[in-house]
Image 1 (cartoon, rainbow over the protein chains, first blue to last red):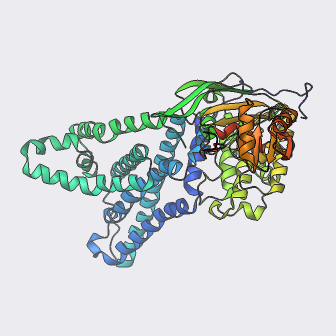
Image 2: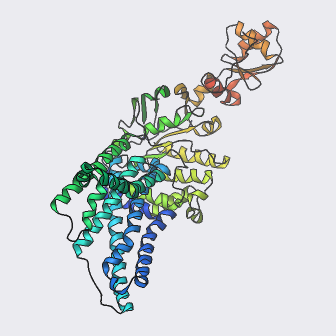
Image 3: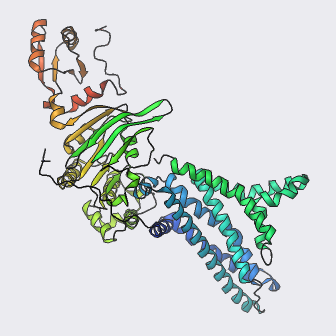
Length: 266
Length: 304
């Protein structure tokens, strides 16, 4: 044994600064880009926006060459890609087991989850801005190529509302990631939420009068459609977005968070 | 100093960790030895706040892990070298840790050099790493923050013999500077090379603890004869508890006593020596024989 009584003893120091939240956000942002799959998922946002814009420029009739058409063209792919980015930022900690390192380096799991949420929303907003930028360029070029006047049929507020709608979708994905903690499971659940549930609820509303009146207040997808109305949602519609988000976002999110905070990481 | 106090973790009726208490002191390398599924990893996950204990607690210098500010700078942890994103490069994994801890990226290069991962290896994705390379990366990750306490789960797993000796000098260096080192292994051979103090766990319970020298001393004798069955019966009749180990018997008394019993019973011996002479192997098997999966019942049938 080489350890002797003369050995110095090192103790944990208590007066070192903790990890600032901004640094956690930075780390989470980097994690979204520094895997091969993550990198191409991010690239796909730009690629999809360019592809959609190009197709619109050459396919759409002249009178439809306006900014709104470009926005609609990349709207659907963005509604799929952004939630997947948010889902993977959460679920990879469990699916790839990186949580063992993440949660030992920063044991306050709520901060890590918060940083992931901020990073996901940042990526979502910047992606929308990039998509709008590409769409705007497409609109100018498309008008020139097709010999028509450039039409800007969108107000800045419309862009804000559309971005908000995409951020809502992204947050639903994030919530499902927290709740399910499995990449494939959460992505499937998002598709059910985004593409299966609306038609089922529409059928229910068509046959049941009581539900038709209730739907705007409890169906988050339905309530959000108001964001795409010219001029944005009315006060009542904001109330519907709020009340339906309680059911579709806040309650499941609270339950998922509670489980994540006390669950075993292994 | 790591202090584990009456730690218990149950999964339904299964007690993965059962009232475990021990201490790891600074300046020593403590080996946490036990067969697979003995509760080593569960104990280490509880230490680092990843698994909530059912009862008891673990304190590191008197603090719970989650109350240590920026813990990566104080406690180096490696729980599973394979728990990394397969699509991320080794260098990126270390960079993320350096960022989280607030260290400059130059620290990443220092660590890569310390664990002998070349620059080109560090740019490969982890899915292309061998287990030994993953272990080296995991050790680099644990040492990056220049911690005072190290908690390493099976760090030598997948390392070649040269790598195991490299790890011994590395951990020795940490302990000599006054650091606390706890490492687990299911291989006695590894613990024997690396550790000063040993804690043996089996089926969630501590079955032995002490310095390597102390545990060697209490290991008793190893004996073989032409008829082990008869020898076992004679030893049992004399009040000993022989255990079948390898091709002989393990008895927790000194060789002279065994010689007398064998002489009295008229059983010629082939080999008789203190068990410690051959290493801790017999001790490990002996200590875990009643708690491990494989039945090691000495003389089933004959002794009934």
